[in-house]
Length: 613
Picture 1 (tube, rainbow, N blue to C red):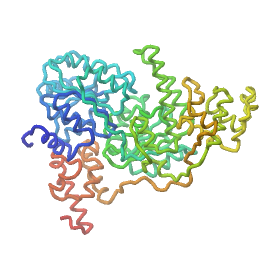
Picture 2: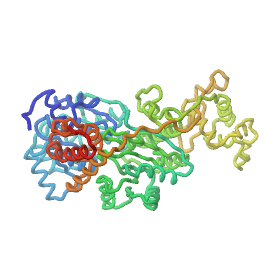
Picture 3: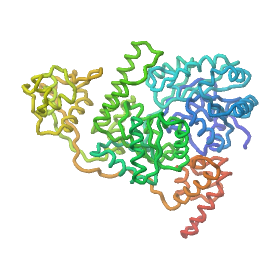
Picture 4: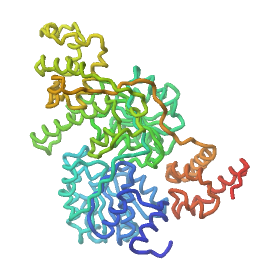
């Protein structure tokens, strides 16, 4: 290893030598500079944007050891495996270790043999662990999934409330970094307050993931469409998310019965099967994982090429986090949401029957329930809008995105603008004449002239708006109602049975002072999302990587990510200096794998009559 440098040069040296990159991504350098200079930091970056490097590089710049607090056992194992493979001294302490293994790691940690040690938050309550930490030089504490400290976060964990006390008991206060993928202003304020961060630098990078293609589809038969989607991607690695355990079982059986190798993962399975399924997927023994949201947090698998949501999640926070597990290495990837109206009922059921948080007051529980109901409404609008999906999602997270992205299903469909003002007036008038007492389904039935018993018993068939839209399908009427909701000409009340209500914008439409236009599908998709073709050399390099990974007993991406292999296939390096210029090739991987891969590239060049010089 080269003689350590200080300042700016050293962090770039570490970036290249251990991680194989020449430049930092947006926001990384500011966080690294803050932590390595001793100033606390809050880092909010989307999944796949490179959060882990923001504490791994400062850990190597600072003296002593860095503790990384994470609730995710799988993340600990994967990141430690990757770090060790890149030449960084790292270890983890969690419930998977035997007492002998735990004692050994603790001893080596106290001897200063590691730069990073990953620990579960529950470990901070162990007196033995605390006493060892008091005797050590702990230069930094990195809190991963920091939103877990807040009641307002989607994954509150009481054990995170013990972190601040643990830090205060150390012989000297280390610098503290907090890291999360998504955080509202309330959650961010809680992170700073509950972790007692001191004058922290707060960096929130853009939420956009340009390599991800977003699409929403509403198939007539979900199962048939799913088989078609997986068949088109059978050479790729993907995750299929379902909202319930039963759906996971049914979808997994469907895929296996039709010749696909798929495994399942949900909280109802025993630990051994969950571990086996996870390992089979991570080590590329199977290409499809079918799971509830219990799977995925901390899974550092870089070559997931598609995420399919078989059911609509209950909020955009969950959807974006789960969809973001695709394309972590920067390669093109797809995020497909399969929507049908009954998904909304399932999501409502999950919200209404969630375990109550005993640490919250009744008032706080009511507020969280209303928050969850509002989040569901936005999720439904995303699933039904004709506008740019990326713009809608980024706007939800408070980030502006103007115009069409050109990389979502709505932007790649041919639409024409159509004036729906008259239909909007019919819908709004119906809401007025029913005294804002009914939900979407009842308003649809009245406008379409349904003859169901409830409408007749309430005398709603005598309204002037009854049957005004009888020539239109229910889905067409629903679509226009959703359009009015998304443009805030209508709103839905909270509570178990939300009803449609007018807004301050409704009057202008009813009086004919304002017109409403919507995009209506004109033709089929103009083109498909761009994909990186798997050339012959790329395929050969993947086969070589798989062989080496199996011999080493590590996931394939630990050897090299798909992005690195694609860069190799494009640059075709045949010398050490050329190979060192490949994205993701650090010094350790150059020494360990460089010559093997260069031999494969030379062989390919000779077989195909290329110069290779």
